[in-house]
Each structure stands twice: as C-alpha cells, then as structure tokens.
Length: 87
Image 1 (cartoon, rainbow, N blue to C red):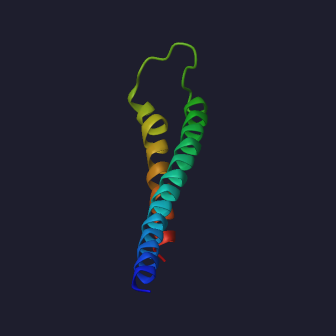
Image 2: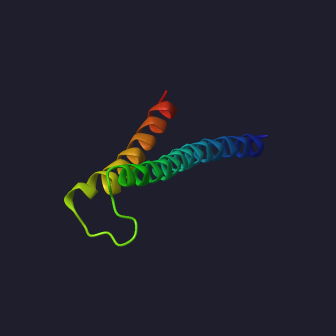
C-alpha cells in the first residue's frame, strides 16, 4: 500500500512539472507568433515610410521598423501571455 501511494505522489509531482513546462512553452510560442507579426508589420512600415526595396543604404530612421517594432511585439507577446498564465 505504501509503495502505491509513493508512486501516486511521484506521478502528481511530475504532472506539476510538466504543467509548468507547458506554460513556458506556450509563453515562448505566443512570443514567437508575436515576433512574426511584428516582423511583417515592420516590413509594411518600412515600405510605407519610403524604404528602398532594391538596394537600400542604411539610415537612422530604419531602426524603428526594422528593430523596435518586431522586438517590442516579442516583448509584448511574452509579457501578455506570462501575465495571463500567472492568474
């Protein structure tokens, strides 16, 4: 009887760890999806703001659509999903 209870206790412990791993994987997945959406939105902004599509030369205004928009979308996606899983 004691060994059966011990096995049940172990399996419950592992299910908690697996649940935590699933939460982390879900947070990372949503963050990556937000990054992809941010990259597409950054590309659209780049073209709208007058970026060259054939042979671009680097200018300072490109930091916004090329770096700030995708990484802020990634951070926002990670933070939003993390807060949702916390509740």
